[in-house]
Image (cartoon, rainbow, N blue to C red; front, side, top):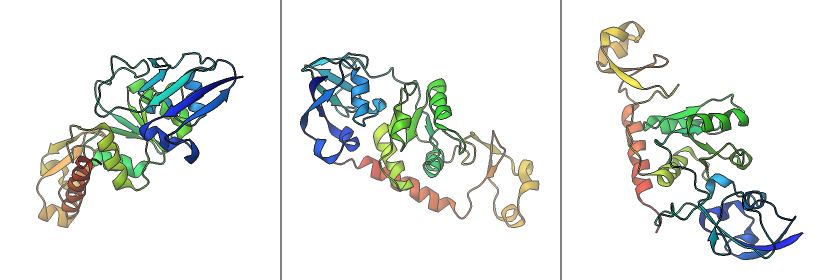
Length: 251
């Protein structure tokens, strides 16, 4: 057994019990675990970590912890660029795309509504979600800490909020600024929407819709048809409200 000291900063404290938040504490572990295993045993998933300092030096996840090490763990930096210092940050993704776990169906719908590529499969298990995120280079959104700790997950984020609107604001704050294109994706299957002539979808429309609306979009994936119905203004207001809240970062 060896003894080290640990300090966790910022939002990573969300994963710790109250008595360990925002303090340095002595910690006893079995001889020479990796620093990743040590930190995750405390409850902090590795995709949430941006920088680990041991005795003042940046170390990778596979660093073997030694007796008397002083371990300091940081979340993503919002002000300072630590790319040249961090040895745990994975390569940046070429584009921001998400996969939401089975408990975040409403958040997935909200993300699609604002035009963000978001995979969601209600019947997917943890292994399938982790593999999909890894294979397609997607950011895994979840409220399951154990899922984020899977080794195949390089890019992931633990959703703190429980209400779908606040979850959307949280994602916009965490990953913004993002290129948002509202009403450009299918809420059902995530496919891209294309403008179509009314004549091409006329046979699928109800009489009142056929009478009062003339501009339509269809999903390139499942074929579902969309138009600016009575609900459109409400959805547009919800989108605008989320963007405004996300821009008002806490001081």
